[in-house]
Amino acid sequence: MNNLKFLVLEGDGIGPEITKASIEVLKASLNKYNIKLELLYEDIGFVSLKKYKTTFRSEILKIAEECDGIILGTCSHNDYPAVNEGGLNPSGVIRKYFDLYANVRPAKNRLGKSTRFPMGIDCIVMRENTEGFYSDRNMYLGVGELMPTKDVAISIRNITRKGSTRIAEIGFQYAQERRKKLVAIHKANVLRYSDGLFLECVREVAKKYPDVEYKEQIVDSMSALLIRDPSVFDVILATNLFGDNLSDAASEIAGGLGLAESINASDKFCIAQAQHGSAPDIAGKNIANPVSMIGSVAMLLDWLGKKNNNDQLKKISQMIEGAIDKTIINPDTRTTDIGGKLSTTEFTKKLIENL
Image 1 (spheres, rainbow, N blue to C red):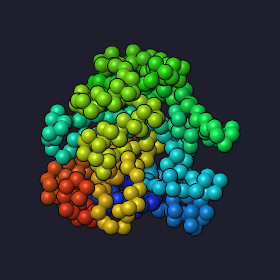
Image 2: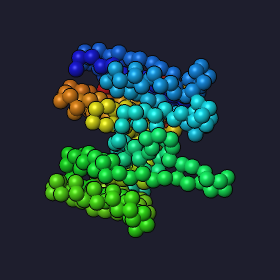
Image 3: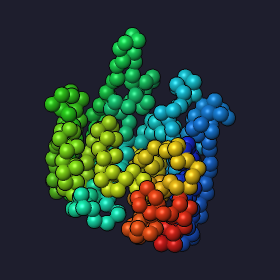
Image 4: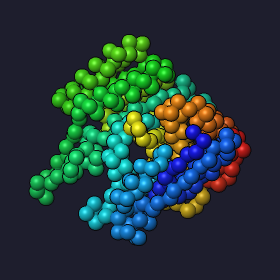
């Protein structure tokens, strides 16, 4: 691939700042390999709400279809108005439209040896991304929450054989390429039908990967085990809500959400999206840590490289990840949230020098 075309959606809060940083790193990286980059920008979030009376216009999806992927900034969706007043969650809309069923969230110790976790952490939380309890994406029509009366609220958990099987497949594929260990997270002792179906599907897929050590763990005990010794875990496979919770815990162990990269992917499309929120309290101050967004863009390049059998894109991804490691291992070239003194722009400049 000598040309790449990405749709950039900067979002709210620190979204524009960390997205800008990731684009600068992306451009510098691709220039080293003479790959041309075309970027399309569209407004989402509060900027879009002010202009168009909606936080996400449906025509953006058609624009995205013509691109190789999306770079999605942070969104303050919890502060948006109701859906019927234009307050759509851009991330949820995109995930549902492109059926981005796999939320891949690595957690790796990049700050050096930790006294609290001396064995470190290097795992991937493979989170199912389209169903479960997430009411903005788990129904074909409507939302998965309702209030029969003003005093009763009901949330629907949607677990399917298709959804469970395909997230298990990609989870085992990642485990096969890594340390060959996978643990499936559940609460089947209480959620007997829904998590029972999830585990049934995972066990069936496990038979196809005899080289991968397969275990199952109840979600509450998993929370304790992850803190006790995170080093023993490789791929952590989970339904939507459990994966969301455990991935944030794993990222905090690894050094904080500012370092937490991720992608949302299907078999055909992928978006880069930082794990953390929009942090409106520090927006515009040039102090946000852009690593999560930069690393997510690197993951997007790796996904494209694997999808298109393009070793060059995989090498560029590795180059960016290596520059991240080289920059943040040095306390003098860190942002303030991880004990350094550099601004967002200063850090980005230093990281580009380390490519």
